[in-house]
Structure formats: structure tokens, C-alpha cells
Image 1 (cartoon, rainbow, N blue to C red):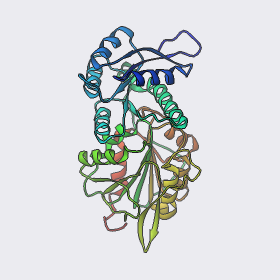
Image 2: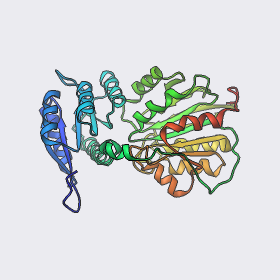
Image 3: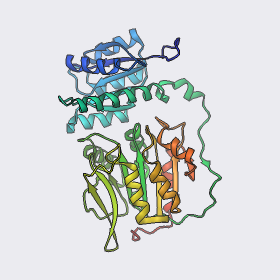
Image 4: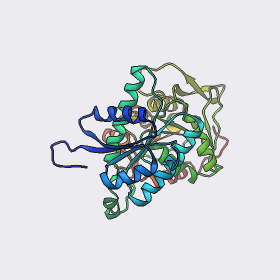
Length: 362
């Protein structure tokens, strides 16, 4: 970043083959005094030349471009001049698949491309874009040499609650910015015969959760699916909350089921980690496990508190491995985490907690 003022500016290169999108994104970014658009590019090859000339802090990169496409351009950036890249993607199945491949190849995050005439839609995309650019500029991708010098992160066992936990019957996991890549990193480590289900709220725009669940299912031994209303919750299945609806757990005729609702529940996020986790705590009580991972804001703090109060096990991702240490930080500062661990250790925490549970208990 260009330091020399009280508030250092983040320099951004905008890459998109559409002149309209280059202008729209540049105006959104320039509307924040902490950000500066240093240039634009209309193709992957032009982007690579402009990166060498301009040395931007962050790049926004179109997923679909003629010639050198977004994914190929990203791979070149990461190999030749690594820095945070935010993919700009339409909510088509093809674009979503490329986006999740890009996250696996090192992209920091993504923003939806569709811009309607509705000012609220544009405002939401602008706020999301600005927040992710600022988070990317502060991320560990932005400082690879600092990472190399760090000592390896280690798990922290927190002293404020001595408890022998009952083996959980369910895992409730919440994440946001940086979460898609983090989930792709850890879920493939879980075995097909995991004796508990996992419910995940990952903040995503409409059109992305279905392809994301399919992408994870292709990568994992464990079954991954987009949650549907009245799904009976089964061990060994990961349920991804659909975008645009709230997800809860209900107990009906001794079976735990998923309930989806379009009611906003007075929450900023739909779906909300808090709403999901609070319902899990209410149904499963001390036999719930809560996991909070990378993300901006505080969604999940009330849900993790509910699981903690019921005597369930609570685990938070540590700062060193978080793309954005927001949601886990809030929970840590509230004193409601039993364990703070690196991202790579979260599957081990789940396996250790559930190893004495048989798959027939849910």
C-alpha cells in the first residue's frame, strides 16, 4: 500500500472486458476515500502488463474474458506477481464453477457481477466490493514474506471453561469472507463415515450456493448438498444453506429436520449464522458443536454464545490462518470459545469430538 498519509490508500487495478463494467466498478471503488483505481485493463494479457507497470495492491478480475480467461490470468498472477485478487463473477453455473476453481487457485474472494437498475442492488454490491478490497489489502496474501517469517500457528486451549464435553450430535459452522476457499481446504479432510451432520452458513449471493455445494461434493469423500426444506438431517452429510433464505433446525417426530424460511428475522445476513446456530443450540443443547471461521462482521457471535451456554463445544479459527479475522475475533473477545485453532486443524477438532459417536444417534 502507498503509505505516506494518515490513511494509506489501497491501489486497485480493475480488469474486465466490458467497458461498462470497468467504468461501474471503478466508480464504486473510487467512491471510498481509502481506495484508488490506478488503472484498468480489458484483457488478461493487458492486465499482466499493467500489473508490472502499476504494482497495484489488489486486483479485481473478470471471470469470463476472451483470449486469456480469468482463471488462466489468475494463475499467471499467482505464479509471477502474487497479490490479492477478487474475482468478479456472474451467477451462471459456468461462471460459478470457474469462480470456485479460482478460489482453489488462490483468489482471495469474489463479488457478484450482475448490476440491475435497482439502486439498492448497486449499493449492496458497492459496499461488498469495497469491504472485500479492504480486507484483501490487509490479508496474508498481501504479505507473503511476513507469512514465511512467522512461526507455525499452534492451537490454543483457552482456560476459562473446564468441561468434559458430550460427543456432539451435530456441527454448526459459520463463515463469510474467505470462507469458500477455507471450506474447500478443510472439508475434503473429513471421512465419508463421519458420524454427525454438518450445517454450514456461508454468506453468498443468489445463484452460487448450489454450484458451490456441487463443487464441494466433487472434492469430498463426505456427501455435500444444498439444504432443502424438510430435509431429514443425516449423519455423514454436509448441508450448505441456500442463499436468500433463513435456515433452522427443528425436531419433528424425534427426527431433526431442516426448515427454510424467507422471513428476514431482522438479520443483516440471509441466511444468518446466528439464526442457524441458535436453532441448533435449542434442539441439540449440550450435544451441539459450533465452529466459527474467517469472515467480516459479527454474524455467528450470538449463535456461538447460545451453543456455549448450553454446554456445547465451541471452536474458533485463529487469526494467523483467517483471511479476515472478524467473526472469530468477536467470539474470542466475548470469551465463548473453548478452542482456538488454525484452519488446518478444524477437521481434527471435529473428528476428535465425534470419534465416540455412532452414526445412528441423530
